[in-house]
Length: 295
Length: 295
Image (cartoon, rainbow over all chains, first blue to last red; front, side, top):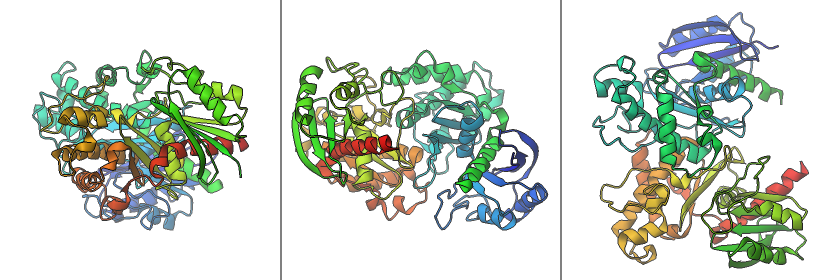
């Protein structure tokens, strides 16, 4: 069995790991994201003696994941200093002449859940993370979604909750989904961090309202067979039943399917890979890159 | 070259045609949709002596397009009398032992535009029709979107225009996109049919606002390489530049791509197949069914 390399390239920290084709992570290391030179130096050091057959990168974005594009493999217009237009794939390829998989962190996580996690055995799934930001990736007919570039599902507009007066945190859109429902907006709206709000605080009803609207759009546009919800905010387990109920209310019986009816508890679920969703996602991208190279 | 059969199965009328694998329609007939027995009788009559190699059906919905499902091939929960649970594919298969393609009318139209129309040569596209209702279909990585069932993109929620007091026509959701932006809501909101409103009437600014919000969701969730807009309402050609401009305003530069910048005129376009989009879509479903049978 091949040894695969995985890089969860986040804006705050990088996690590197090695693992197997069955999704097992056997070693990992984590360090802060500083300059590309310093950070990639630590990546090279970690993988130097690992003899990996392929490396997968699940990256913060926006990125260019479109093969054949002149800027394929790079982070594009990030506000993060030094990283705009940095090409991770080219940097890795110079050091390690193996197949490199490259996609958004959330497309990676969707592929990980599809390959080894909560969506195993299905043809389609959607993974959404609600944490510092909101992002989602999706598998459709066994393929990750690409087109013009990659999905940016966290920035859709939702209707404002009638009692919400908070203006939203998104620097681009103000009160888009991420602006209203990501972790930081909870803290700014209520004056205390989300983790400190009690499970019966009205914050969660509002949060569930926004997330259910997002899920309604995803269901109506993509029709995924399962939705996996992760990230720090979803550690608030009381959100799951609230979101399921609100989604049913919003859909109003329009889409008839057991997964949206009495089987909704198996339709909207936490990650099967738990806190490994991100790193396993990168591992799944490595596995895919290896398989594509073989074809 | 094979002769292909095409059925545009609408709730008001059926259009049957025959055509070639290059998308040329050589004969067509149209009749009102009455009972399944009578309507399918006329379908059988039309195709009886045509010797088609495959038949494609682009159908009104909701339908079950998921192969392997026990109800595959049927219209499911339509309010249209007599058609609930009627299985079109089985009815056709009994008469014509050829491959039958079956999908929503809008998934068919998306495939038609992808195969022969405005999205030829791309990997992905989205087709949206705004007429009596609002519906959309999409091709992702060369495949039509299926999952739980089929997309129902016309029923997403959008934010209400601040000057809109109309409650919306959708029997399920009231003021979802279809409820606010389909042809009938134009007539009810303004007191005259949309076709009679002058091109500078404020109705079109409101209409463009709603449609641009829908397109924003589609772009952020699916990232299609082109969006094709058809249907009776889009005969109002002044809508195209208004929608393009509003979409750019809503995205606020978040997704950087020439198609969303100075090339947006080639990104949001009318159907390449014109008024044949529906029938050619069914023809494309026939072509696909024939190819899948050969594999």
